[in-house]
Amino acid sequence: MITYKRLWQTMKERGITQYALINRYHISPAQITRLKRNESVSTHTIGVFCQILHCQVGDIMEYIEDTQ
Image 1 (cartoon, rainbow, N blue to C red):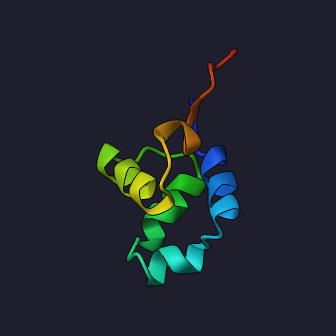
Image 2 (cartoon, helix red, strand yellow):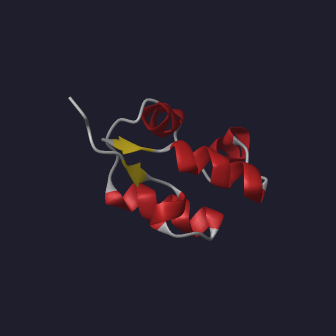
């Protein structure tokens, strides 16, 4: 499973709010909702977040193996 928990931590460290993502960087609220729910997003979207936050992919997402 892919989790985006690191995204929220990285945003906090960089001082970027969800409000800023929507209004300054024109990220759609639907994309933010998908990330909050750990749903799939495109690599393009991940790239945009890396550019906005000046970070690497690993600072945004993490793979956690399902133990079921």
